[in-house]
Every structure is written in C-alpha cells, then in structure tokens.
Image 1 (spheres, rainbow, N blue to C red):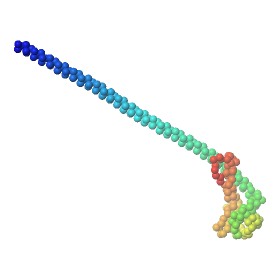
Image 2 (spheres, one colour):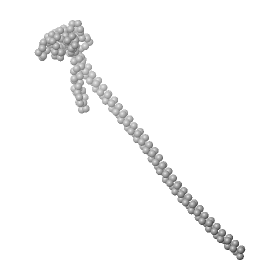
Image 3 (cartoon, helix red, strand yellow):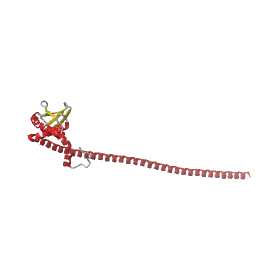
Image 4 (cartoon, rainbow, N blue to C red):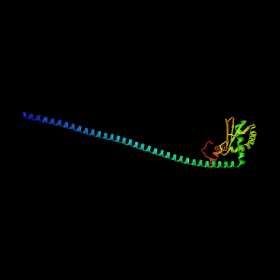
Length: 238
C-alpha cells in the first residue's frame, strides 16, 4: 500500500511540475511576443522620426540653396543694371561733349566774325557809340569816365558826343563824360569800352568779349534748339 501511495504522490508532483513549467513557458512566450512588438514599434517610430528629421534637414538645405542662388541672381541683375546705367551715362556724356564742342565751334566762328567787324572802322565806330550809350544808361550817373584800348582813343573821342546825345535823349539826363588817357584796356582784347563812375565804385564792362559772353549765355538755349531740336525734358531755360 505504501508503494502505491508513493507512486501516486510522484505522479501528482510530476503533473504539478509539468503545469507550472507550461505556465512559465507561456509567460516567457508572452513576454517575448510583447518584446518583439515593442521592438517593432520602437524601430518604426525611430524610422519615422529619422525620415521626418531627414526631410526637415533636406528642406532646410534646399531653402539655403534657393536663397543663395536668388541672392546671386539679384546681384547679377543689379550689376547688369549698374553696367547698363554706366554705359548709358558714358554715351550721354560723349554726346553732350560733342554738342558742346559743336557749340564752341559756333562761338569761335562768331568771335572771329566779330573781330572782322572791328577791322571795318565804320562798323566798329557804330558799335563803340552804341556800347557807350548802353553803358551810360546802365550807370545813370552825371560823371562817367570811359576806358578803352590805347589804339581806340581817337575812335572813342569821335563818337563820344553822339553817344552822350543818345543817352540824354533816352534818359532825359545830362552827363559829363571823359576818356581816361592814363589807364587803358589790354591791347589783346577785341575792343569795346569800360565805363567807371563814383571813383571806381560803379563799373560797367562793355568790351566786345563781355558783350559776346553775355549774348552767348542768353542765346545758347536757342542755339541748342536750332542745332539739336527742343528738349522735352527741359523745364527751365537760361
């Protein structure tokens, strides 16, 4: 009987051990399965985060490259505009230089023509008389001294009375005029006179050079228009 009881006990213990081992095995399998799923989940999340970060870095680099080339393109366009502007200004300056040279030729021809008038004594005498009358009208002083080239003294004295008479007729004023016999205008000027009043405090320069310069300043816009046409952008005139 004892032997049988021992066998039963051994069978029960063996059965219990087998059940426990099965449970343990099942638990191990469950843990392994959970671990595998967790590993897959972690790896998938890591891949997703990696792809997101990679995409962000790629896009960031793309933006840097685009910004670099946009800046480079803008700089190239700016340089092109600057170059075109410089070329335009250079061409404009060359054109203006050519125009001014042409105008200077006209002025030189006019000056030479004026010198030719001086050679004609009759015409030069008429000019001197007109210059004297004009200078007196500008001064409107009762006592005036006239300076001229030394070579023109006789011509000036010869037209002085007529010049005074014209002044009195125009202004209704009397004037005493004398020719300076000590101080002369430079011999290398074309001609004309210089009128002095109030001991040199009032002066009118009516040399032919001064008159020509004044006329040129007044007429140069008209000459430009005659030569090159009117400028639609010009708002002010000399």
